[in-house]
Amino acid sequence: MSSSAGLSEGSLAALQHLREKREINTVTLRFAEAPGVLVPEVEGNLTQEELVQVLPVDEPRLVAHELCFASPEGTRRHAQLLIFWMPPAAGEQEEAYSAGFTELKECLPDMRVHLTARRTDQLAYRRLVALAG
Image (tube, rainbow, N blue to C red):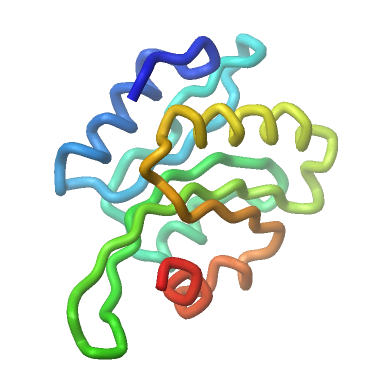
């Protein structure tokens, strides 16, 4: 993971922690007061339901989340997801967060499942598993 001008040192540290440690599976990022700088907001071990609960209803967020699930054969699997949370009430912020999402994809090239969600049902567990498949 290379350093990026739009990610704060705290964001880089949180994302590195997510990738190297097993005690967290989720990092949510938001733009700080300083324009164009993403800072970590949540760094934790969240279920899919808890992830949906921490997302604000009127503000966008960028999320790196490791989803744990079972394959149809019953084997345990993990998939790392990059999520662009963009609820309808946050429309004026879409351009800035879209640029941040592009930057995160470049910073984390091994995270191959990318999705944009505008409603919580788009983050339903079965849908995430199908995308990670």
